[in-house]
Length: 262
Image 1 (spheres, one colour):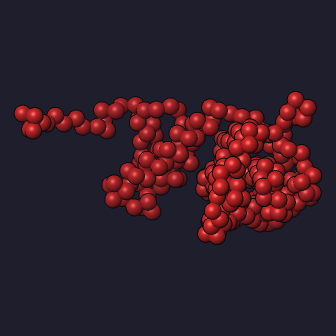
Image 2: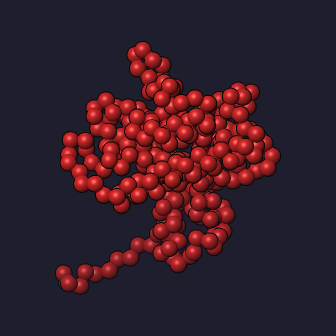
Image 3: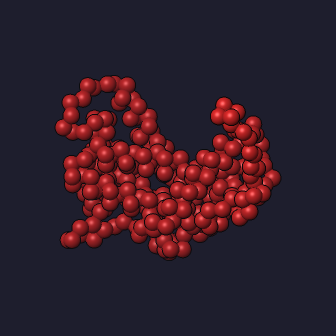
């Protein structure tokens, strides 16, 4: 994995053991921790991925579930295209970014509370099915480059070797096993994540620690992201989040002379 992501296959590369350790810690440990998170709660809840009676249609799952499945489909198709064009380094970098930034740092982190619920409910089942589906596809994509860890996880999730599984991206002869894409949802979630980063900077600039809850927060203008207000409020530790259209309420215009020009 390190040799593939380090540089283009046609460029000479000096081997660096520290780079191997970095790849191991960044990609492999992250993927393994996501898998263990799913597997541990699956055992506690008696989750069975083959039990279709508890399987919610993707259209009925939460926006967070639908987003990660759509994001995975977009990444998988781009991964396939880059493999066909021999851009293996770009493909694997994109897959690593998906696992680290989208799957682990956002989806799993925002879904923990859903699996903490002791009672088994439809939302909890949907989260488990979503994690299972994403991990299976990730293992199949990385199988050609990282054959061992992908096979270990895939065998535990599906009961057979990843190297006997169909390639998830379809062609003219083979039907795709990827979930449907929703570009609008992906763009909306990108806005939500950028707002979360901006909100954290606002708290830092105003010397308001993240652990201290704020009573109210406002999003001034922009598209409708009301479906994600709860996620964003938790991310910023704000009790109540609303959208505000009156920009004048949040800005102050000062006119001062440019003394140097004068």
